[in-house]
Structure formats: C-alpha cells, structure tokens
Length: 97
Image 1 (cartoon, rainbow, N blue to C red):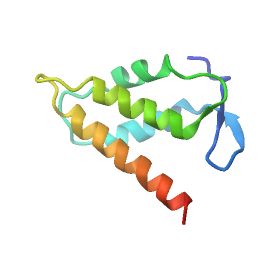
Image 2 (image 1 turned 45 degrees about the vertical axis):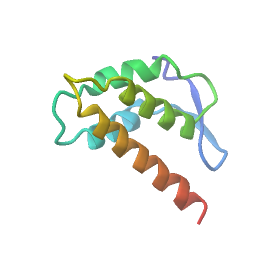
Image 3 (image 1 turned 60 degrees about the vertical axis):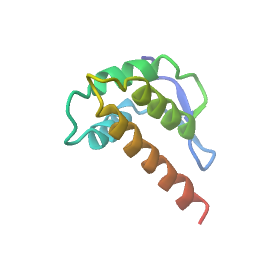
Image 4 (image 1 turned 180 degrees about the vertical axis):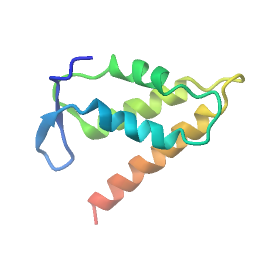
C-alpha cells in the first residue's frame, strides 16, 4: 500500500493516508468477534484506495470489504460490517449538527 496517497477529509482538507488509524478502527470494530481477520478486510479494501479518496469513501470501502467476507463459516463479519456502518453513520450525522 502506498502511504503517500492523499486523503480528502470530511472538512475538505487533505492529508497523507494513515493506515494505522484505519487498523485501529478495524481492531475496535472486531473486538470480541470470532473468525474475523482484520488483515483480510484491510487487503480487500486497500486495493481500492486511490489518491484523493475521501475519508467517507474509505469507510464505505471497508464496510463493503467486511460484508463481502460474510459466510457460513465466518458469520461474525456481519457484525463487523454493522459496527463499521454505525460508526460511519455517527460520523456523518455529527458532521451535520
């Protein structure tokens, strides 16, 4: 993953992508879940990142990556995707207040 990619934040400013921040959010969302691989979600989402991507698009990409991993063998990905979606909605709604 190219850590020199720029991200457009919700307030319109840009900064370099912070993969550690993404990892911390995934780690938080996966807490207590079984058969969930944060690395798999990161790998599936990172290939879709591009220079200038909006933070909201990063979040939506990660949610989709988690949802794509839901299976009979790993049903907890549904909870991971749900937690990430709720977190994303909170950020969107707090911005509009």
